[in-house]
Structure formats: structure tokens, C-alpha cells
Picture 1 (cartoon, helix red, strand yellow):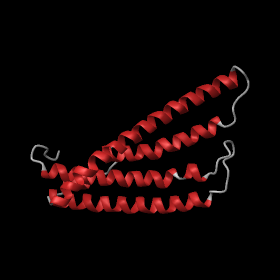
Picture 2 (picture 1 turned 135 degrees about the vertical axis):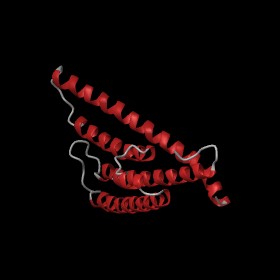
Picture 3 (picture 1 turned 90 degrees about the vertical axis):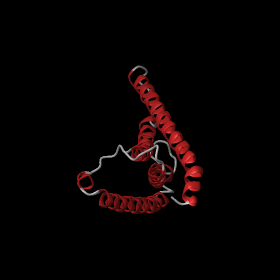
Picture 4 (picture 1 turned 30 degrees about the horizontal axis):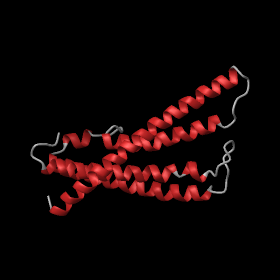
Length: 173
């Protein structure tokens, strides 16, 4: 492996791992806030007969946040559903080629999602949400942000894979 790639790994991998930790904690925080809001809504609605109108919308926005950020975390951990039957039956060289092409398709798709998500969020920037009255641009921005996070995770996977290839003490599993 070349020296620039090793330098890139040493500088980027810790930052990317730190970003993943922040993303994971944001998902944990979102689920705690969402559970608290839903519990508050149930108590206010059925005990005090005075529900808050914005809780359902805020919970939906938090769920969407968890979905897009969690997709990046799942991608990095290899937890997404994958069809590996073809790669499993191919010789290792061809398997790596198919995997690399697959990764390129994933990156291309995510770039399209970023572009279209950005256009969509700009299209709805002046539309207020029904209950919270915030511009719908903010909830829709999670689409390009989540796709960008997934691209970062793909880069981290590639860099991590390269470090495993070059390291004799960490053979590829």
C-alpha cells in the first residue's frame, strides 16, 4: 500500500470513527426524546384531556432522523441486507471486482440521493410544517445529510478494508 494512502488512513479513520460515535449517540438521544414526547402525549391526552398538537409531528421528524442516520451506521457495520450469493461463489479476484463495482454503484446512488434530496429540501423551504410551523426544509435536509453520512461510511469501509489488507496481524475475514 502506498504511503499517501497510509497517511490518509491514519488521519481520517479516527475522525470517521468519532463521527460514527456522534451519529450513534444522536440516534440514542432521538429515541429517548421521542419516547419521552410520546409518553408525555399519552399522559396529557388521556389523564389531563389536553394533548399537545406538535408531539406527533416532532416524533415523526425524530424517527426520520434515526432512520437516515441509522442507515449510515448500519452500512458501516455491514448490517444492511445484502445479496452475497454471487460474490460467495466467485473466485476471490472476481469477488473483489464485483464488490468494487457494487461499491461504485452505491456511491453513485447516494450522490443522486444527495442531489435530489437537496433539490427537494430547497423546493419546500417556504412551506411550514403543520404543527411545529418550522420550514419543511429542515426535516427534508436529513435526506441529503443522511446520504452524505452514508458516503462517509463507505469511504471509512474502504479505508478500513485497505488497512486490513496491508496488515498481516489483521487478516481479512
